[in-house]
Image (cartoon, rainbow, N blue to C red; front, side):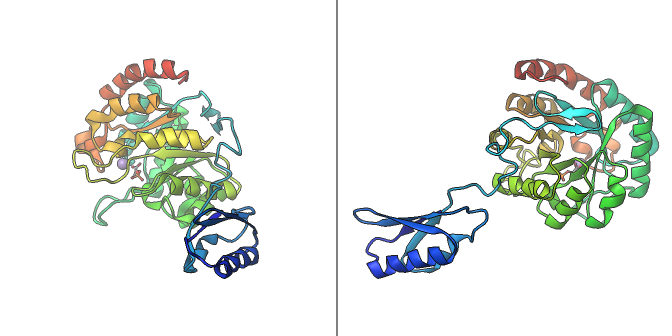
Length: 338
Ligand code: PEP
Ligand code: MN
């Protein structure tokens, strides 16, 4: 860390900073400029105390961090792309993956017909919420265990892998009993106890970015999962909340490019929650591939107008079929295979 001392600080004040830096476990190396002094604090920021508290001293102007706070997820620690293996379906490092299915599991007919349609159009992973985080407590909250049973049956019938959300620590065990990938939703993106329990299940984890989460916080949440022994994390950009009203959220494709630079983890894009509009899904999928995404998660429903959740953003089977043709040249250009 670098500590910037205010101009006109006395030598006693500078010595006090050097002493404090030593007490906090670093070796201080002062650099005296013409007007101002800076102190380089030498030591590992990840294992030593955070020196930001030194700004409590009146002679300290600012404290700057040199090292990144995320280590295991960073490209520095692992330069190659990570490949996550979901029961034989590979994601990352040139392997592109399409996850698709309804926002919520509603009934057998809806789920099974959607599973067959998305499989025929190239998806290898079936999405569907059995536990739904809804803004209002009076809205459909999902079928719970019955939804999980239907997802398992759809997997048996189609061979598709299953991604489904786990909402609480209490549910990790039984959701992990069915899911091939545990989805951590935007509303739980920094629920660290849930992240730790999900990590311990050993299942791959699709970690959504929180609605107001900075990229660094998203990476640090992923770091929690890796630090608890589970390297199989898929980062998922699903839009952030902005002032815009044409879209439900603002799909942050710059964050995808940044996450790909900063981290070796695969990055998945969710254009459905990302824009909240079915008519934008195809364009956003093409954009996602162009900026480096390793996969997509898309909401598909047999009759979006009748959906029990997120109807406005779910595409029907015909549109999902068209999506495949639309993304093919982008995948080719990116050197990725579906
Ligand atoms: C969903 O995938 O249906 C969902 C609720 O996602 P998010 O957590 O991104 O809002
Ligand atoms: Mn949804």
